[in-house]
Amino acid sequence: MEAFFAGAIPQVSASTSVPSESDESWEADGLSDSGFGSSVETPKPTRQLVLPSSEVGMIMGSSTFIELESILDASKDAIDNDLFLYQTPDYQWIPSSVYRYADFLESLIIMSAEGVSGKRFYIGEDVENGHVYGLVNIAAFLAQSMKETIQYDACDENSVSQGQIQVCH
Image (tube, rainbow, N blue to C red; front, side, top):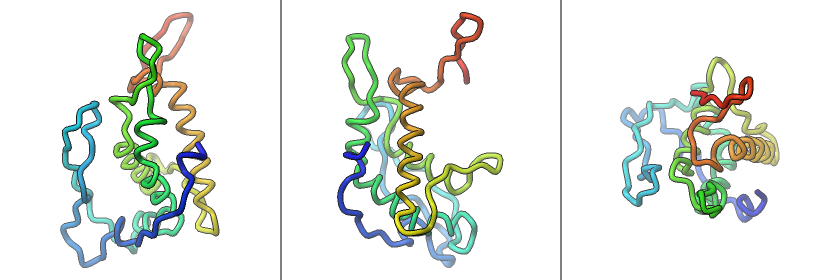
């Protein structure tokens, strides 16, 4: 994982992720891959306005989040082409058609800022090099995801119960 996160951290301002409170029609910028192995570009969904003074805005505008996102963005091609790989029936490792960086980042933003049932994805502390703890947490999460689903290019993990394989949703 170290190779994916090595290099200089590009400077990113908080305004790239969090609009000003006067911005009433903020839309996620850019295009993302469709996530199905095609090169067709599809627009990202429109995000709801996030005010910088809100709890979500403070997380997304924190130096920890900005540094973490910058490092991940600098490594997006390596993540798509060297990390999110699955094994074919011919024992070849090729880029996943299901798991793509753009979708991963969007999910990370939602889970670290909003979470589910009061639980959020830990991205580190807002201290010097606090983002490194978030990168370690991401590495652990991706290692488990690789073991469970990415290597099969599957969305659901398999569950073995009483000697029978059951698909979990």
